[in-house]
Every structure is written in C-alpha cells, then in structure tokens.
Length: 490
Image 1 (cartoon, rainbow, N blue to C red):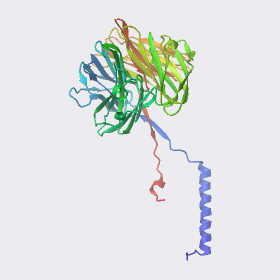
Image 2: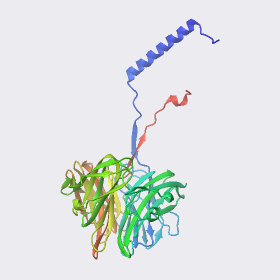
Image 3: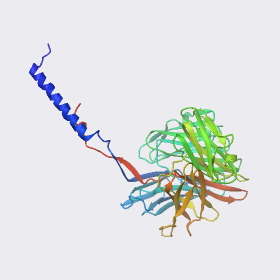
Image 4: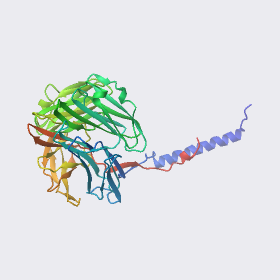
C-alpha cells in the first residue's frame, strides 16, 4: 500500500502552493516579462587572414600588403600586427607597428608559401591585407589580385574551369596547429560533378593543399566551387589561368562570393571592351532570378534577359556584354530562393586578360583595400554602386613615406544617385609605390563598392579588381547574466 498524508497536512500543502503562486503572479505583474539578455558591441580583439600564394616562381612580382586603417574605435589599446609566410624555404615576416602603418612581403620570381596575417589588441580594428601580382611574360601574363580572407567553414567561388589550356587551382590553407578536413564540391552546367578526389581532403597543420580543376572535372568549361569544411578551419582561394597554346588568354583570382541569398549584388564590374558573363548557382531549389544592370546612366532590366531560370544545383550563365555596353557597373539579382553568383570579365584585343566580380556585402561601415599599385601606367578606379536608394561616401588614400608613416589625402566625397554607379579614377599619393584606399559611407545607401586596375599593353589591356567587404572593426558580444537555475538539479 502507498502511504497517504493526513488530510490536515495535505490541506496545508495546498494552501502553501496557492500562496506561492500568488506571490509569483504579483512579482511578474510588477516587473513585466523578463527582458532578453542584452548584447554589447566592443572593438574586435583579434583578426586572422590568409593570403593564398605569396609567390609562385613563375610570376614577375607578387606583393602581399597589410595596413591598419587609422581613426577607428579600439585603437587606443596596445596591439601587434604581423604578416608571416608559412613554413618554407623562402620565409619572410613583416610587421605593422601602429594604426596607419603598413607592411609588405614582396616576391620577385620567387616561390613562397601562403602568408598568414594576424592582428590583435589595438591593431585588430581596421586590419586589412591584400595580394597583387603583375607579370609581363609567360602563361600568367597579366594582372592578378585578391583580398586575403579569414578562415571560414563554408565558402563559394563562381569561376574557373577544367578544359584544355585552362589551369584553375583551388588552394586550401590551414593556419591552425591541428589538421583540417575539407570537401571541395563542384557544380557545372549539367549539375553536381562527382569528384571523389575532392572529398575528405586533409590540410595539414600550418600547411597548404592545392587541387587542380582540370583533374577534378576534366573537360568542364565553367565551374562553381563550394568549399565545405568538415573539421578545423581553412581559408580557400581559386586561381584561374587560361591560354591558347603558348598564347596567354587571361589570369586572375576568383573572389569569394557572398553566401547564397535571395538578393545578390555584384559590384565593381570593369569598364571597357570585351565580354561580361554572369554565372548563377541555386544550391537548394529551382530559381527564378530577376536581373537588373546598374550603370552610370541608371538601372534597368536588359531586354530579353530580364529573368534567368536557374535549375537546382546547376551553373547557369547569361552574357551581359551588350547590356553593360562597356560601362563600369553592378548587377543586381533578385530570386525566389537563395542563389550565389559571379561574373567573369574579359578584355578585348589580341592580348586578353580577365577579372572577376562576385556577390558582395553592402558597406555597413568603412571598407578598404591595400597594396594598390602606384607605378605609372597602372590606372586604379574605385567603383561605387547603389542598387536602390542613393548615398554618399568619403574616399581617403593612404600613401607612405620612406619611413613607413601613413600620409592620408583629404577625404573626397563620392555622391551616388539612386540606382546608379559612379567610377572614380584615383591618383596615387606622390612617391607611393603602393597605397591604401579607404571608403567610408556617410549617408544613404546601402552602397556596394570595389576597385578595378587596368594597364594598357601592346594589342590589349591587362586588368584586375574585386568587390570590397566592410572592415572588421567591432564585434557583438552577448551579455552574460547570472542564472541560479544552472546550479540547481532538475
């Protein structure tokens, strides 16, 4: 038999429960519903980026540059910033010592491993690193540049191919002290490509692994690359080079594309003659994609190309050469399901070079690129687009004295009208072999930006450039509240 409590004790327990519930109800009525824990925005304390290839030995000159954009919150703390090659025969180190400072590692016909950039404390906010290569000879003749990226678990690149004469390399860099495991997944015009050699790729600690797309997907002309990390952390890059026999036909790095989204903007499409081909992948479902082109004369849906049907997990392409008409601009995509996109631009003439754009983030704060060339004959333009409401941004250039001291130019206001693109040519600061450009939104928007670099060559034009991302300046830290419940057993 079960033991039963005396009726008096049962009654007292019931009364106690009623009183307790009443007290709880009164407390809730007085205080209202519990507020969710707040978050705190603080200056970023640490930034790590990876530059995939500081020198291949075949390219004339590769400059890996870093800078800390001055005047940002949190730079009043002690800090350190360094560029350092991974272990190898041609190791190198360069340091940034103060906000506004710079560092560089230059390779001239020298093979070097990847460069890892790390900044902490007061030099972490505004730390940026980029890689710029110029080659006047060989199969990689042309200009090639890329932003150095932080390691991530999921990365998309829309560009590259595996046909004869095309060498596209996926470079996986592990900056950590533990091995990483990665899947390199490929999507072509006919759908996903079975490439077992791209599954479960192990990248050793502090090491680099390179895969060639002509080995993973032989004969496939155009590809999208999805790098999915199983364990560890990896920064990826995709380098694309094409030739016809011994005649180079273009070289550049494919920029990291924004994650799949229902609205994608591809900025910094270069001006000039040549082809402009948009490529879109819808990873999860068939997509109906609306296309708008944004140039200096306004935004419009190109006749006959207003919409693109993108079947699930296939690379779909549309030639926007006529729609852009040789103008600098951007392309806006609106889809019913998330898509990822890139655009390949190729110059015209007997000597052909290429550059890429990709889906990019809006400028929610300052953005910058460093390592822009200051040499005569190389022309740099900053390209800013508003796909919707217009806005304004201030452009500042940072040159450097022989002692490495930053010399900023006065801010230059760039006004962008609704649904237009503005391309601004910049003059390098006097005496600067290379310089940093900083773009700070000040009104309206959202704005999207990037840069292009061109160089006239006999019978053609060499070119490069890519979209910009906002600088890492602050980070959101969730507030921690004491909760007695975590110490009590349930």
